[in-house]
Length: 98
Image (tube, rainbow, N blue to C red; front, side):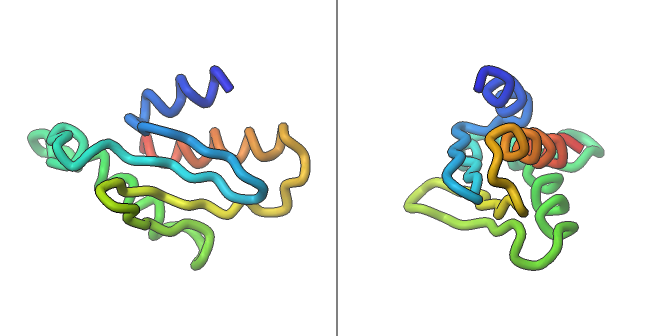
């Protein structure tokens, strides 16, 4: 769990929820300009997240809005073991950092 928090912090994720075959990532609030606006000539972190979502097979990841929070819901494939779910979650966080 500590590793997930550290990885999530690096990706500026507010919250990570693992439930069954799904993981939900809560993105920073809209007021976080550093996250949502491009920094100089580089893309914003949010743009990187959108690219990661669009690069995945249809239905694997989706962006949702829950009141004022933006969330990414990911379906983990074929994971019944906690270690495999953990590994796939860390892998998804890595996609958001590219």
